[in-house]
Length: 150
Image (cartoon, rainbow, N blue to C red; front, side, top):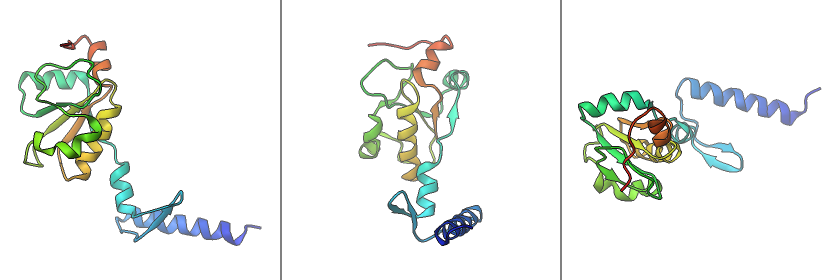
């Protein structure tokens, strides 16, 4: 026989899952000892869209996006980079980004981890066309493209 706690937790999970499926905001959701809104949880946990090295190489031939290296410490760069902003300081450096939050922004770092974090922050701040290079400069170089080291 299931305990009352087990039944309650199962029922609560079902209600929350249903609310998320229908995009209903649950006022407060207890997760691992912290309170978060369900909507904020979805936004923070959302993946940043990626592009491949091959896609980026094609885009660089007719560049129409803002290109940002977010890696720290400096370990090289891809040609035509517009800005260098430390991944976890991106919110403090919005003056280095396009003012238009609908402008296309492509982020990259060494492996993709830091650009994913920076991308999530930009999306949280309302930027709508943010992507990052899957696998970062490691993948870029592995696919035969040049990394510039200054």
